[in-house]
Structures are given as C-alpha cells and as structure tokens.
Length: 118
Length: 115
Image (cartoon, rainbow over all chains, first blue to last red; front, side, top):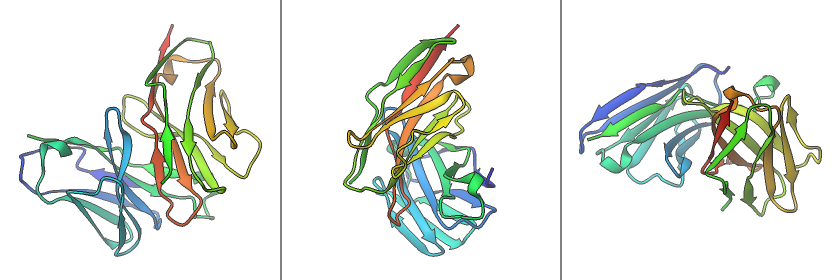
C-alpha cells in the first residue's frame, strides 16, 4: 500500500477558527486530492494538485484553500471554519501514471479526518 | 461534466447469495476508467475492482465482477457468494482518461448482509 497518512484523525474546532489538515505521502506521486464525504453526497472533490505549487479547484472548493510546497505534503486549510464544513475529509493519491508500480494501479486513500465545527 | 449515479441507497442480501449494485454514468469521453470502492465501518476506502473503458472484457476479482455496458454507460457490480464481511458502503467512481486524473464518485450504496 502506498504510504499516505492524514493528520489529525479527529478534530473539533469552533466556528470562525482556521483549521489545517495535512496529507503526507512517501512515494513521490504527482497527483494528490482532497475530498469531503457527507451522507447522501458520497465523496466530493474539494481541490487537487498535479505537482508542487500546481493546484486546481474541485466541485466544492468554496471556503477551502490548499498548498503544496513539497511533493510529499498537501495541506487543506479552512480559513474560517463553519458548521457546514463539518465532515469527513479524505486525502488521496493517484498511482495510475506510475508505471513502476503496476500492482498499485488506481487511487490510494488516507484514513480520513473527522472534523466537527461547533 | 461527468456524473456518476447510484440509484440504490441501500441493498440487502442473504449470506451466500448474489447481489448486484447498479451504477450509471454520463460522459462524452471515449477513454476513461471506472472503479468500485468499498468502505467498511472503519472508514477506509478499499479498491474492489477497476475497468478500463477500452477493454471489452468485464473485469473480475474473485467473487466480484462487473457488467460493463459502454454504450448504455452502465457499470454494475456483482458480488457472488456474499459474506458477512462484504457489508459496507460501496462507491462507484469515474476517472477521466484525460490529464486531470480526477475521480468522480457516486453517492454510494449501503449493503447489508444477513446470516
């Protein structure tokens, strides 16, 4: 399994405070993603990155920003958390373009961060 | 934009029986990939099976197989000899064959397995 870790695993924060979630990978994959999972909506893409300092918006990007200053780290920031951002957040990496690991063909997900905004 | 639809919010099956989960998608592309992911209560996302659109042969992985109908834009998952450990949320997902590499998910189907 590709080495991908998310931190923290759980977080409770107050409305209006900034929050940063971290995704760390150990295998130098180019593409990284942030999703949020909500009942009835499945997983929805927030932002993604296709290289260092190269990022783009997904379908639910309002209220979120991202940064990728190193290949291995992809940070998701909620500038001013709101209750509507209470969710489970997943980081993922794409291994589809990595021809050196054909057995790892697809996407690998982190364990998720449960964020509660009160 | 591509969309993925899972019309069955919940399904149930008896242990050892067969169940089919439905998925349809909308796209104008001819080259793409489709996936089924399993999410047990542990929250981990686990790849069940994948299908490349250019392959006419349906993918199989042990007890899991798909019925890929490209013209109908349908990608159903069949689970044979269902086991208690198959109980989970199942997500269908679409990946564009272009350079975006974005994965688009359906809303999921919760599968219950009864002994």
